[in-house]
Image (spheres, rainbow, N blue to C red):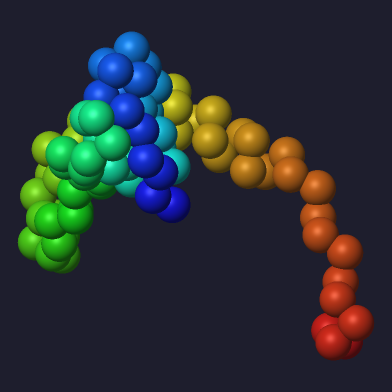
Length: 88
Protein backbone atom coordinates (compact mmCIF):
# COMPACT_ATOMS: atom_id res chain seq x y z
CA UNK A 1 0.00 0.00 0.00
CA UNK A 2 1.38 3.42 -0.95
CA UNK A 3 0.30 6.53 0.92
CA UNK A 4 1.09 10.20 0.39
CA UNK A 5 2.36 12.11 3.40
CA UNK A 6 3.64 15.65 3.89
CA UNK A 7 7.29 16.17 4.82
CA UNK A 8 6.16 17.78 8.08
CA UNK A 9 4.02 14.77 9.04
CA UNK A 10 6.81 12.37 8.02
CA UNK A 11 9.23 14.21 10.30
CA UNK A 12 6.78 14.19 13.23
CA UNK A 13 6.03 10.48 12.95
CA UNK A 14 9.26 9.14 11.46
CA UNK A 15 9.64 6.24 13.90
CA UNK A 16 6.07 5.05 13.28
CA UNK A 17 6.60 5.52 9.53
CA UNK A 18 9.69 3.28 9.62
CA UNK A 19 7.82 0.63 11.64
CA UNK A 20 5.03 0.56 9.06
CA UNK A 21 7.58 0.21 6.25
CA UNK A 22 9.49 -2.53 8.03
CA UNK A 23 6.71 -4.60 9.57
CA UNK A 24 3.76 -4.00 7.24
CA UNK A 25 5.57 -3.37 3.97
CA UNK A 26 3.89 0.01 3.47
CA UNK A 27 5.36 2.61 1.10
CA UNK A 28 5.08 6.38 1.39
CA UNK A 29 5.48 9.22 -1.08
CA UNK A 30 6.76 12.22 0.86
CA UNK A 31 5.53 15.55 -0.48
CA UNK A 32 6.66 19.10 0.14
CA UNK A 33 4.34 21.88 -0.97
CA UNK A 34 2.11 19.29 -2.67
CA UNK A 35 4.97 18.02 -4.86
CA UNK A 36 6.38 14.51 -4.53
CA UNK A 37 9.97 14.60 -3.23
CA UNK A 38 10.84 11.00 -2.41
CA UNK A 39 9.49 7.54 -1.72
CA UNK A 40 10.12 5.57 1.46
CA UNK A 41 9.62 1.87 0.85
CA UNK A 42 11.01 -1.49 1.99
CA UNK A 43 14.28 -2.54 0.44
CA UNK A 44 14.43 -5.81 -1.42
CA UNK A 45 15.94 -8.55 0.69
CA UNK A 46 19.10 -10.19 -0.53
CA UNK A 47 18.65 -13.76 -1.68
CA UNK A 48 19.94 -16.43 0.71
CA UNK A 49 21.60 -19.67 -0.27
CA UNK A 50 21.88 -23.06 1.37
CA UNK A 51 25.52 -22.19 2.02
CA UNK A 52 24.34 -19.14 4.02
CA UNK A 53 22.00 -21.37 6.05
CA UNK A 54 24.79 -23.85 6.81
CA UNK A 55 27.08 -21.01 7.89
CA UNK A 56 24.40 -19.51 10.15
CA UNK A 57 23.61 -22.88 11.72
CA UNK A 58 27.32 -23.42 12.37
CA UNK A 59 27.55 -20.04 14.14
CA UNK A 60 24.49 -20.69 16.32
CA UNK A 61 25.29 -21.88 19.86
CA UNK A 62 24.34 -25.48 20.58
CA UNK A 63 21.51 -26.03 23.09
CA UNK A 64 22.58 -27.33 26.49
CA UNK A 65 21.64 -30.77 27.86
CA UNK A 66 18.90 -29.36 30.11
CA UNK A 67 17.16 -27.74 27.16
CA UNK A 68 17.19 -31.01 25.22
CA UNK A 69 15.87 -32.91 28.27
CA UNK A 70 13.06 -30.37 28.70
CA UNK A 71 12.19 -30.60 25.01
CA UNK A 72 11.99 -34.40 25.19
CA UNK A 73 9.82 -34.25 28.36
CA UNK A 74 7.42 -31.78 26.72
CA UNK A 75 7.25 -33.85 23.54
CA UNK A 76 6.43 -37.04 25.44
CA UNK A 77 3.73 -35.25 27.47
CA UNK A 78 1.76 -34.21 24.36
CA UNK A 79 -1.63 -35.94 24.07
CA UNK A 80 -2.11 -38.39 21.23
CA UNK A 81 -3.94 -36.97 18.23
CA UNK A 82 -7.23 -38.62 17.29
CA UNK A 83 -7.15 -40.91 14.27
CA UNK A 84 -8.35 -39.41 11.03
CA UNK A 85 -11.22 -40.95 9.03
CA UNK A 86 -8.75 -42.23 6.41
CA UNK A 87 -6.70 -44.26 8.91
CA UNK A 88 -7.61 -47.86 9.66
